[in-house]
Image (cartoon, one colour):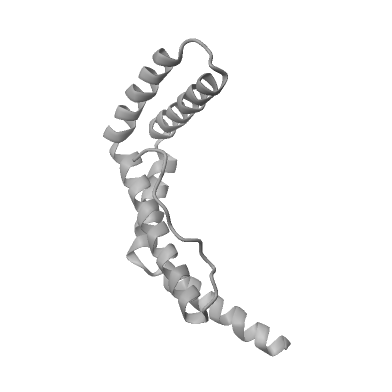
Amino acid sequence: MENNMNNLNQKIKEFSEAIRETEEFKNYKKTNELFQKDKEARKLLEEFQMAQQTLAIFQQGGFPGQEEQRRKVEQLLAQVRKNKVISEWIESQRRLQDLVAKLATSLSSDLNFPFTLPQGGGGCCG
């Protein structure tokens, strides 16, 4: 049993290394490093996320100021979309997530065991 676990752990390490060698992972790593170094991009994204959260609170509580907050969110979203560092970072995340989702679906199919839930539409910023 222990030998089987050691063998499985080795195969997992090899699988992880294979993922690290993909263009999707390499691109994500590169764009993540650029994003982490860009204080202005991080601040802008944080400000946008805070504005989104505030709008959600206003909407859930029926508080006044919703329209003004919605305009603030839209303005910040426009700035976020124009920011090349943020856009490339988000796109690289999406591509890596797509790759991992395909791998999980393939694993589910190969083992005839549902590791993944059926994918539906949605998202926050589409």
